Image (cartoon, rainbow, N blue to C red; front, side):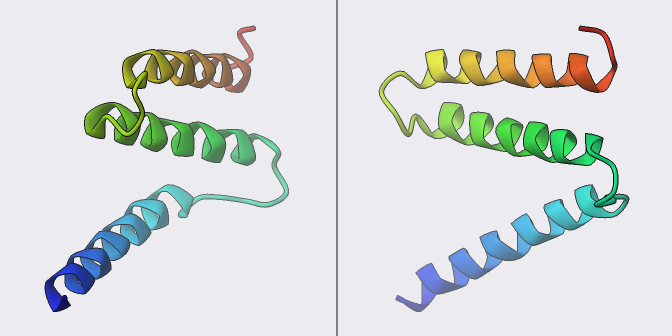
Amino acid sequence: MKKKISARTKEFKKKISDYKKFLKNDHDWDGAYILRLLKYKLERTRKCIVSNHIIQSAPKKGRQIKVVEDLLDRVLKDKY
């Protein structure tokens, strides 16, 4: 049982570290940051779903999420 708790703690610390790097230059006053954060979270979610086959249609769902990521990127780059 201790091994599972330790693995979860390690995974949590890694996630916090990843988000910390991402949020280092985040500002609440700029609306673009919420779009960057959403894109970042969607990317993480897509990778997790596809690599772990969490749902039966993981490849399809991964492609759908990627389309949304690409659209958010276009909005952020003002190329829509």
